[in-house]
Image (cartoon, rainbow, N blue to C red; front, side, top):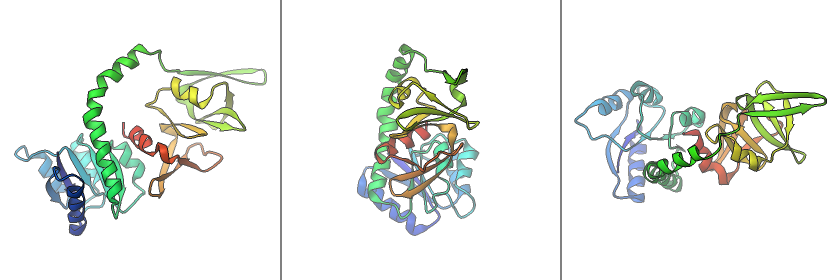
Length: 251
C-alpha cells in the first residue's frame, strides 16, 4: 500500500512515518509534502505514483488542507491528522476515513488503518452482495402517521430530525421543533429507515444526518453532538458505536 503524508511540521511528519512503519512495514510512504500547492502538483503529475491513502494535516504552510480536496475533487481516501477538533464535522463530510488528533495515538492510527482496509478492500468485495440485498428488501419507510388528540398528521421521513426515548415511549422530533409519539421501538425504526440517513447514536436516540449541527471530541473515543433542533439532554455517541458512526458520516 502506498501513502502520502501532507504535513508542514517536519518532526510530526517523521514521527507519523515511523508510526506507520511500526504498524505495517509493507506500507510505503511515497513523499512527505508540506504545502497545498506542492500536494496538488504531485497528485496532478501523471509520472508520480498515486497514493492509496493520504494522511492530511489541516493547517498547512500555505493554505487549509481542505483546499486540496476541493481543488481536485479528490476521491483518494483521507485520514486527517490535526491538533484541532473544530473541523471534525467538515472532515467526515469530506468522505474521510478517520480524524486523528495530535499527538497521534499509535493505537488510534492502527485502528484507522484497519478501517481503511476494511472499507476499501473487503468493502469493495461486499458491495455487490449488499446492493442485491437492498433491492430484494421492501422500500424504506418514507412517511409516518401521528395523532395529537383528535387530529391526525402525516409527515415525510425527510421532515424528521431524530427519534428519542422519553419516559419509556418513542417520540419523533421534526425539524420545525414539533414532536409526536410513535408506536415503534428504536430497534424497529433502525430496521425500517434508510441507514444512509439515520443512525442510532446511543440507547435512546436515532438521528438524521441532517440534524447534526456540530460535533466535538470530548476525549479520545468520545464524541458530543449538537443537534438542530436541540435535544433536551446532552447527546453523546456511545463508545461501542463510534466506529460505525464515523463510517456512516463518511459514506
